[in-house]
Amino acid sequence: MTDAGGPSGLDAGRHLLLYDGMCGLCDRFVRFVLAHDRRRRFRFAAIQSRVGGSLLAAHGGDPDRLETVYVVVDYASGTARVLNRSAATLFVLDQLGPPWCLATLLRRAPAPLLDWLYDRVAAHRYRVFGRRAACPAPGPEHRDRFLDA
Image: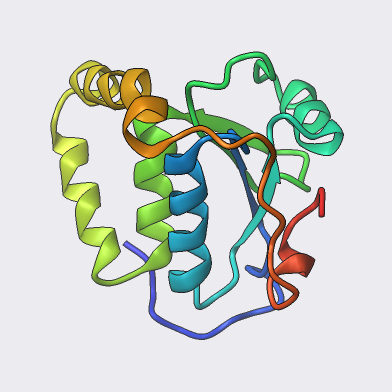
């Protein structure tokens, strides 16, 4: 779990969350993270954007795979690593701190089971949460956290 301290220069914008910019569920997840990321550890980019797609590809991810959210941990460092599906989601919740980090208790379940559940939600996300015609633009108060804004 994480500490509950305030923003620090070392942690601010340290991780990159790459998401399907057309997906209503992904949009809600990004808004959730923006609202609860008090330490501003995350920056954001839509996978469909030039910046998002090229960063994902540079770190070994597949920019054509839109059915998952990705997190590039320490994306600006030489030790960056890419997480996806349930591992990415649990990493984000852990970084948000209490009470959201309690969700990491789910890591006790087998990763294949968590990814299977993630895939079930992803398979129905457009039908349940909608599909946007274009990526929503961030508000001015968050524009600096989006690499593709």
